[in-house]
Amino acid sequence: MLDLLRLRQIAAVVVCEGKKDKAVASEIAAKLGASSLLFLPAGGIDTIPDIIEMLVVLTRVARKVKSIIVVVDGEDVDSPLERARRIRDSLASRFVSRGMNAEADEPQPAGAQLYKARVRYEGQEVNLLVAVSGDFSKSSPRRAIEDHCAKLLGSAHPDKDELHRLCLEAIRREDMETVCNAFPHICAALRAVN
Image (cartoon, rainbow, N blue to C red; front, side):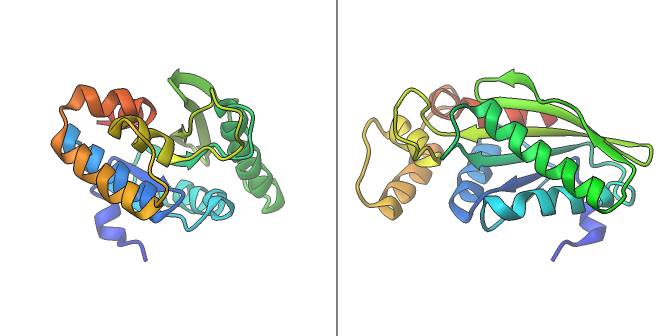
């Protein structure tokens, strides 16, 4: 559950598709020295628009929150822009179905696999940054945070849990440039709000 008092003190909320995405993004934020962030695991792609909608409404209470970062896998889409548009479209349809006076702009490029859209709700404006994980140079529709972990480690591992554990260790161990070369979308998103 969101702690509303804590929400008043943060500048950005980072919504991650899953727990592994959250762990990776949190480690990168610590590496960058990013503060005033709240990390939330969404529990899957389908719940992300609901969480964003709730956060947009909560910005009326937590006026310091000016950005929502979404870290999401690029599976089953042809491009990062397509994923960003799907999230924006799903959010916009929720606004319409609830009769809310809200709108979300077309996502614009803000970095490698990073898109930004402004969301307006009853006089408040929030930046929505969608950081899409995955290697779009490969033909597989399975694109995820693990692609970036494999890049950081120099090789893939068949066991995803082991890959994730090694990835977190490497994020802590490697220099910032190496980490941001493997995760440019997450680094750019975190730097944009900090």
